[in-house]
Image (cartoon, rainbow, N blue to C red):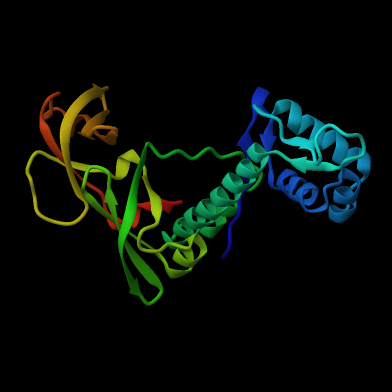
Length: 254
């Protein structure tokens, strides 16, 4: 089974940049002409012009500029900001596909997934830790990626070999380790094992059933966990706490 969702980057006033917009912008970049770009992607000149006008007005910075300064009939090209926006969008597409593959690999019921068609789904991950790949172990259809964080801690993630190839992951690559707070388990004991990060409990918010725990690992590096209220009752601000994350619960972004 395959799955897909639409990716959109928010601009101003809740306007979004979608794949169809990126396709048009790339056509402008290739042809240096709105007329030729419209022909290339199979839309009318008016549709292309109106779309580009909307995007340019909603963008924090201009997306279009004249190819040769301010001369008339000099052609149209993309600004540096537009090129960076396209690059970001395409990288997010790769991360999104990697995430969807992990969802399907988890054994989610196909009928339930199909029932979500047409809904706008917002997914979030509280933990996004940057690091550098130090080791890659290839395990037939899977790859075990070891990443050194800025704190010096090592985190490992197990992803599909196809995802590794799509993301072009190599030793020395800068990546982001992404995981949700409920997958983090906490302990006050310094147990041995992989994917354990120690830190100081800096914030604790508890309600009747669950608690959100903020762990300060190092300067600029914090980690969030969501645990039951019972588990949190044994914790207090200032405690040294150890977080463990399963390698199968981590997604890699570039």
